[in-house]
Image (cartoon, rainbow, N blue to C red):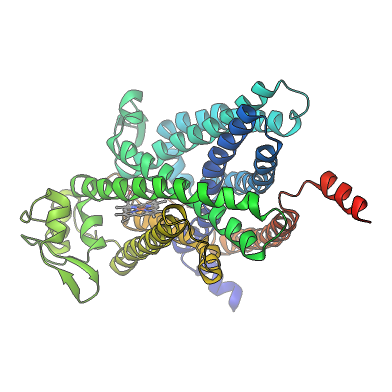
Length: 454
Ligand code: HEM
């Protein structure tokens, strides 16, 4: 009974569920790794300049956590590519001629750059000349950014296809420059990079706060990383808010349906209000955001549905409104809490130079989750809000799944992935905990002190 139910379950729904689960899991590690690589590169450079062994210990501690995040990110990223062939073969053959180049460059250039220099950085600390060792970690950071560039170029094609022509029912690339200078990509990339900076800043802030709160013997080193994370988090948040605003404006031009769903705007309005939460609207705020003035029409779902029907024929062109609407609000809500946390930390600690309260430090440790929630809901907004299209205006999602695959096969692979991911999570939490407990303590010195005291 169960088997036959699963076999006839909607293959499209299951394939989308599988892609969503594996992507969300993968994206817990991507922004963290990108941001942490930058932090570590800065600390390695500072250690090189100052010759201070404490700076080196800081870089090594965060480097160990970075390696764990990088390893899980790399393993889970490979699963993503399997799915194109397994569940989404119609989509792959439709866009393969466009996607092939960016994804191949990502693997050959960016991932090789990242992994090669990561290996050199890990094993070359006592072998390579110090300056070369520092350059290695900067190249790891560069590799991770280049990797993000190519993945986002591919995603931007799905959001706003450019530089292609149809041939034999497939999209073929006609202009590489158009593809890589896609406006959608130029807006998406800064948002993702600043989001990565926020993710790493809150991670460093939260763990440093934990160690300061516990008053471990290396707490003074964590106090340094705490202050630095407050500063970097401020830069990241400023960037993410600005780029997020520009992205919302871009949606007005390229995906007005997503913008209307994001605001649950049923009818076109001039001026258009913005709902903070359902039922609490600020008059004209949406028009101000889009036009930078208190008037200007924003098209509603009804009118856009009619326009789309005129262009593409009968069908339902509205994305799932409640998910798009709430994803946006959760992302912005997380941003507001992050602003408050950083504001408090910067004013209280950096400006007034007062010691942090224990409860505030605890809150900062819980704050590690905020950018992750914002990242996940950001992607939900970007991907769910684009529905019913997998490639906007070109290919509907229900035409993209492999036609030979059964619901049972997708459920099976989903189950296997989930089991592996649970195992990975347990191992990750265990090893991260070990590393955090170990901290930045220089064991040799501690041992000497203990012996001397004995
Ligand atoms: C007021 C604050 C924010 C605004 C106005 C904003 C705006 C947006 C918009 C409009 C999108 C959808 C773009 C699309 O459909 O392609 C988006 C996506 C996204 N957002 Fe935000 N965002 C904000 C804060 C944040 C924060 C704090 C983070 C994480 C730390 C974040 C991470 C993301 C991610 C990962 C995506 C998906 C990738 C992308 O399309 O850029 N956002 N954001």
